[in-house]
Amino acid sequence: MSEYQHRARKRFGQNFLHDAGVIHRILRAIHAREGEHMLEIGPGQGALTEGLLNSGAQLDVIELDRDLVPILQNQFGHNPRFRLNQGDALKFDFQQLQAAPHSLRVVGNLPYNISTPLIFHLLDNAGLIRDMHFMLQKEVVERLAAEPGGGDWGRLSIMVQYHCRVEHLFNVGPGAFNPPPKVDSAIVRLVPHEVLPHPAKDHRLLERVVREAFNQRRKTLRNTLKALLPAQAIEVAEVDGSLRPEQLDLAAFVRLADQLAAQPSAPTQP
Ligand code: SAM
Image (cartoon, rainbow, N blue to C red; front, side, top):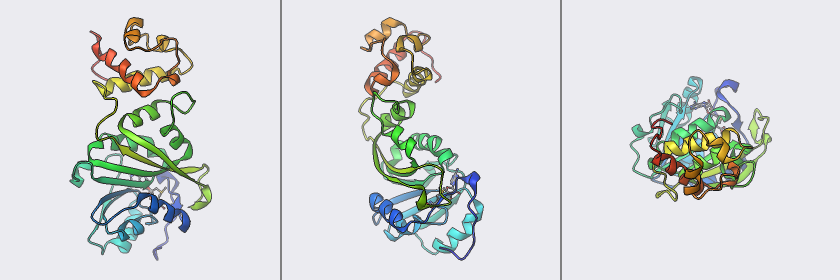
């Protein structure tokens, strides 16, 4: 810990990890190695940063809070493998890291208010990424890792599983953080597929179909997709229109999106 005092800021989602056992467990799950290119989002006061650097990896960090910059520089700036990028990870251009394809290992105990948009921003750069390990709200991890048929299966599960294999690794209670958050947390591993198992003709149309279908998750697909797809196109996709969206797997949604792509009036914008 540094000699500077830093008061946790709510607006930056600052809940700092202080439980050495949990920190160790997370670092073991990540298992950074010498020569790898790591990216830590929101290093805070460096709870995970130190262990990541000790592995011998090259480490870029992105931190939004300017007040944390001197603390981080003071602690790690002497290390030539450490590079601090001050700014908003949601606006960060990951291409500037000049990572080789499928090489970047992304980690972060993420501020919960930005976790979903940040995962989507990262997935726009999925070709650069080898894997991602995040601490998220447990409920979000359950949605990410969900399977069809249950209440957790929805837009987030489908769009993330389109790009990645998802593993819910373990849960972390509020006591591991300072200040403790109001919710339980969990560590998730996301591994982008090198070859998509169910590629859609246009993934923006997949987003469109999934969004539309889950807007009213209690209704049948025939009803919710009425404005997008005629009943016949749903049939050609080999989907039973009397089902509700949570009963469909990813492959079925991709078939619906491909039917949408084949419609004469297919929308070009999501
Ligand atoms: N990694 C540290 C730990 O585990 O103790 C801090 C985790 S804290 C939950 C989240 C960190 O993300 C804070 O340091 C916060 O300032 C930073 N942060 C918040 N919004 C951010 C953003 N948009 N881009 C980059 N960092 C952000």
